[in-house]
Length: 356
Ligand code: ACO
Image (cartoon, rainbow, N blue to C red; front, side, top):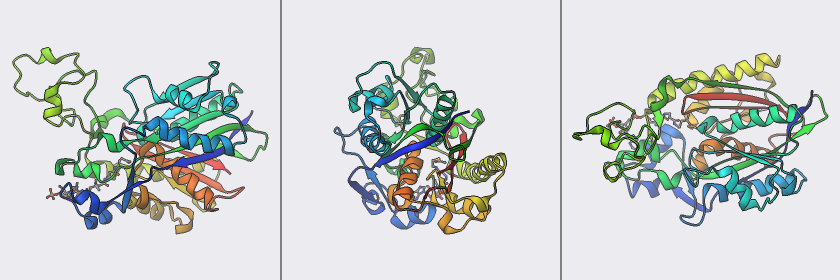
């Protein structure tokens, strides 16, 4: 059986730095509150009307392709993970194909919507395709342009202060070194609490009779059915129904439980222990979550990579950005055991073990 490996990695973050103090000028928040609760000091915002999720993804992908030692025309499959796509449809997979100038049409492009765990889901899909011999150079991208879709009023502060923009990309290739590459991936989901962290309008539920948390509400319309089938109404916009929402404490409690569980599941499967981890790259959800997981797993500071302080939570992009920075800094070396783990909206969660 073939193994797959990360053959090249790249990342891109936009130039514009937005500090907590910058946000406190437009909403009722403070640097102290945000740092204390999340560890975040700043985040990056893409250039409005110039950059998009797929254009940022293309910048990261160009670096990953070059580092993989291949030409863009060698890419035979694209997987794009994002929750903030350029368009509702088509997805960013074909848009990045065009942006990169990949003209051959024998390739496939797949978009996945697994939010914070999107990169790990994408990695698992790519791993299966390479293992079966179907593809040889899979471009996997995680990118987000959250800044275009956040509520900058005080009402949206609990969500808005957390998120930032950026992109990361890898090229997944086969390897003949039996002890190298992706050792295992573990994926999980539980839809019970789908609306606890969600962006539900516009959507095919089509009704304005759902509130932000997905609860059915009577908004005083004489005929609710009148609104069925309409993705977006002016009233939804007027009532600020078109922003993401999150029950922060609920998410926090589940995250700190699921991260260690899914990491242990992967380690046990591979016959390894936390002590074997060279570098844990957790999805950068909240520094407090990462610190909790580190403590629970008994890991030293040099075994965990955190960069949420600089970039905030970049959802599908956070793991490839962090992994790329760790590798560029020399903190991930040949032969190291790298563990990736994520938890997020859905809820979906997962982990991956890679022998670098
Ligand atoms: N600035 C100032 N005050 C705020 C802000 C803000 N940005 N946001 C909320 N508050 C206020 C609230 O209104 C509330 O005020 P009140 O007591 O007067 O009602 C108070 O702060 C406490 O609010 P809580 O929501 O209880 O604050 P909490 O300590 O839970 O922290 C946070 C909120 C940071 C969102 C936390 O719950 C969290 O990190 N949860 C995990 C969510 C997460 O990581 N999401 C990322 C996406 S999912 C993922 O990637 C896993």
